[in-house]
Amino acid sequence: MISRSSSLFARLVTVLALVLAVGAGLLLLAAWASARLAADEAYDRLLVGAALQIAETIASDGRAISVDPPFSAFETLALSPRDRIFYKVVDPADRLLTGDADLEIPVDRARLAAGPLLLDGEHRGQAVRAVVAGRYVPDATQAGFAAVVVAQTREARGTLTRALTVKASLMVLAMSALALGAVAVAVRGALRPLGAIEGVLAARGPNDLQPLGLAAPQEIHLLVASIDHFMGRLSGHVAVMKRFIADAAHQIRTPLTALAAQLDLLSHETDEGRRRDQLARIRARMAELGHLTNQLLNHAMVIHRARSAAFDPVDVAGLARRTLIDAVQGAGDRAVDIGYEGPDEAVTLPGDAIALREALANLIHNALKHGARSRLTVRVGRERGRVVLAVEDDGPGIPASEWARVREPFQAASGGTVGSGLGLSIAAEVAAAHGGELRFESHSEKGFCVILSLPDGEGRS
Image 1 (spheres, rainbow, N blue to C red):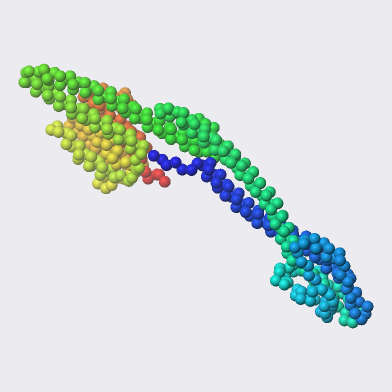
Image 2 (cartoon, helix red, strand yellow; image 1 turned 60 degrees about the vertical axis):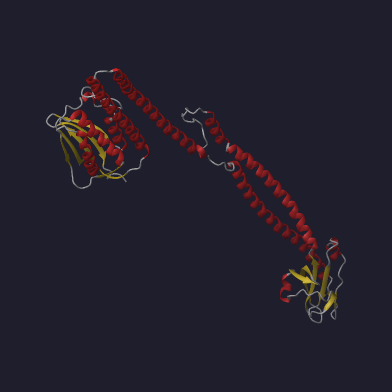
């Protein structure tokens, strides 16, 4: 039983949800960074404005420098009740003019002429954002730049950053939820053709092996085509199996019926001589039935191996010699000259050794039983890029008008002794499975020849 795993829909939605979650996390991080930058830019403008307002009040009467910080410079910064503001003003000699003497924000005098300078620092254990602005005092005792330092704690900035981040996060989460819903709907729609395939297959009966006949999207077209191809192969296998069962039932029924009749006669026979004759006929009938059964099984085996067996290098010369040696016993007491003509070295081709041996054995058996009078020869050789296995005998052979018919199962040649009609069919199917052919040649001076002509495989990549 195949274990049931999680659905493809759940897998796809889960993967896409993870992708959206990662994307949302990155967007939230970007939103936080953007909000922090926006808050810094907003409050930095206020800091710079306050510092410039204080710098504008710096004046000199030629003897002393004075400064009168306006209240408006701190009014906007004071809108955040939790923030604290610190400032100081120093003259060109770094003497404190006003403000917090302990405000230790460094003043880089080389940079004062370039405009206000923003920097981060710490004052009284609190993180602050500070600005340093300069104003040139030309008519003082010591001409130079007076410096204005304004610092503010970061509470208002943090509050604004959090507010902007929350708003952006709500938008990102809302868009992610909408996107996930859209993804779920899209995946469900994309998987609908698979549901259609499942419905068609579930509604079919066990004997319906027709192609699905469904128009499928490009992404699953190969799947539908593979199912149709599998159905076609399965239908072919089932057809072969049905044909084999029907043929086997038909072929076995007749000798079984005759055997039953002979046994019935034997049970009522009182004459000893006739009983012996009937027993002999029963033994002969049993032998024929055994041979027919073996050939039926061999025929089924050849059909199966033609569809499933992998090809390996086969030495057909050695196979022919071994098969011929085994078949000599089938000649019995008949005076038949059995011979082999072929090279002593290996003649190799890609093939199924079991099926090739079965085909050659059937050709030799047919020749011994129905053809050979006094001579049977097995030849192995090459001709025009093909390997040839020929079984030749000095019998009457098969009329040319029946050469096509005797290749079919259960089609014995007219005249001669009775046979199952499977030997040549087995050989023909083995030849076809190897990309070759079964053919016949009739030579008045040599007799009749059945030939298996097979590709030698040297031209294949």
